[in-house]
Image (cartoon, rainbow, N blue to C red; front, side, top):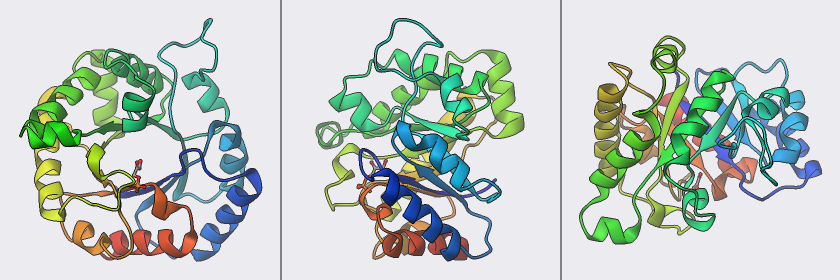
Length: 255
Ligand code: 13P
C-alpha cells in the first residue's frame, strides 16, 4: 500500500502559480514510492491533470464533490465532471466543508459512493474539534464520522475498495488545521491505529492508508514519518511553496 503526501491548496494559487509549481515539482521529484497528490481549486483541475500527464507518481485531486450526479445544484461539481477533468481522486468531508460550509454528515456516504462509482480515489477526512477534544470524545467523534461515511456504502463498492485500494483516510484534528499547533505525532499514531481498526471492521478487512493533517511542516514532519501507522500527510499551508513541500515528500520516502 503506497504512502501519500497530498497538497491541499484550498482557495490559493492562480493558474500561473499552479503551473509554475507543477513544473518545479516535476523537476524536484526524485525516485520514490510515495504518491504525491496536488489538489487545486476546481477551475485548474484539468490544467494540472494535463501538466502531470505521464508523471505516474503525481495525482490530481478535487477538493470536494457534489452529493448528486446531476441536477439543479447551483455551484456544485459532480464526480463525473471531476473524472472528465482528468483528476485521479477527490477529498471528501474536509473540516472546512463540514464546519464553514455546514455540510451535513448524511451527505458523506452519498459523495463517497458517487466518487467510487466513477473509480475516483477517495480521501475521506475525519477529525474532532477542540471542544470535542476537551470533552474527551475525540475517538467517538472520529468513529461516528467513519461510520457515517463508510457504513452505508453498497457491498459492491466495499469490495472494490478492498480490491483496488481506492480509499484513504485523512485524520485532521480541526484544532490543528492552519493554527501552527500540530498534534503530537505519538497521539496521531494512536489515532491512526484506531482508524485502521475501525475501517477494517466497517469494510470487512480493508485497512486504509491513514494520513495526518494539521500544521504539518518541514520541522515537525520527521515525527509523523517515523511512525509506520501514519502513511502520509495532507498539507495546507506548507504545500503552497515547493521549498517547504518537497522536504515533506522526502521525509516519507526515507521512512
Ligand atoms: P494546514 O497544513 O495549513 O494546517 O492545513 C491542513 C489541511 O487542512 C489540509 O487539508
